Image (cartoon, rainbow, N blue to C red; front, top):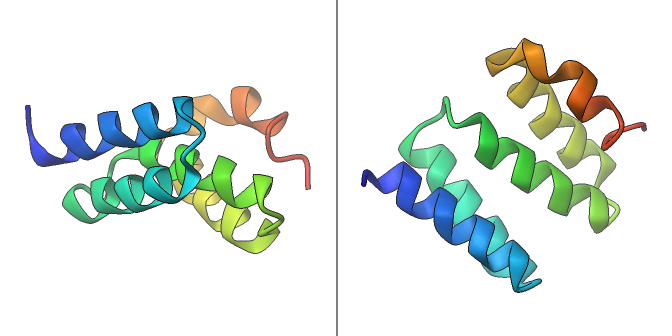
Length: 81
């Protein structure tokens, strides 16, 4: 398993535990390891939105959609603002 996948899996596990600080750190590490990791942008965007950081959420959503335009419909409900 490569570093990006390790960090992505850690971010997912942390979200499931509702440990948003660790999830954010691990998602950011996944992005640093692989800037094409759209899943990490989605996770980080979801956390940003949950904490009221609409700008951060929008930036991460935009990047995720640049990487995976086919997810636009799926993600639009999560990031209405």
